[in-house]
Image 1 (tube, rainbow, N blue to C red):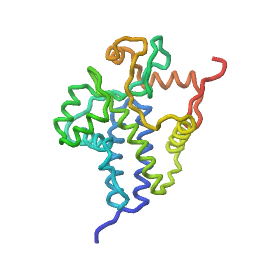
Image 2: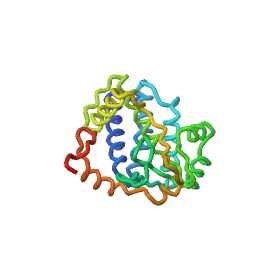
Image 3: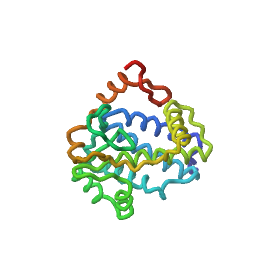
Image 4: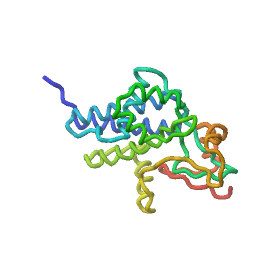
Amino acid sequence: MKFKVSKDDCIAEAKRFFKYYYRFCKSPDSDDLRELLASAYSANDKLRKAGMGDFFDSEEFLSIKAIRNFFIHQAELLNETKSLPVISDVPISGETNIVCLIPVERFKLIKEASNKTANESLDKTMVFYRDFVDIYPCIFNFGVKFYFFIKDLGFNLDTEEVLNLENSLEFERKNGYSHYIKGRISLPLGGCVDEFLSKNLISMDERKLMMEALYEEKNGMYTFKMGI
């Protein structure tokens, strides 16, 4: 008898995805990205087998699938997850403080290992710099799409990670902000962004220490500590 994937199986994988996403956003460990990509792939597979839909029409998912396939079956990504400076003398413009950078030469290998459709998606969903390709905006946008997809299915994910995401989405809705990002970083007063990325980013551990020193967190939202 052919086994049918259940709604509960899909809910469990959805919870796993957001757990790994939350971990990835705080960690410099490449293995956390690997687990996140694998969970996105698995979630799509389970939803499809359960007859609940899939993400094959999502350019973000097709990009994630291509990167996952390379990571699992071919070679390391050599990615670095870093943060923009929490405090900077140089004005920075960007929709997110986190970047996940893959060396351009390694990214070319990902494209060589992928089909035409995947390459078209990769070109549209990544942020390209001189020396690096930032894959974080693609992952971020897929996470938002995945959340709305499972909410439409009536999934109730009562986890801390999903609560934090819902608080962020509600804040964006109330203030008229887009839920999605383009992700490109710029320097409003001029300067070379490529050199900035090479020399001025901080580690995720440094970001964690500075955020704890300067901000208070409640349900995924940060407010500046009074008296500092």
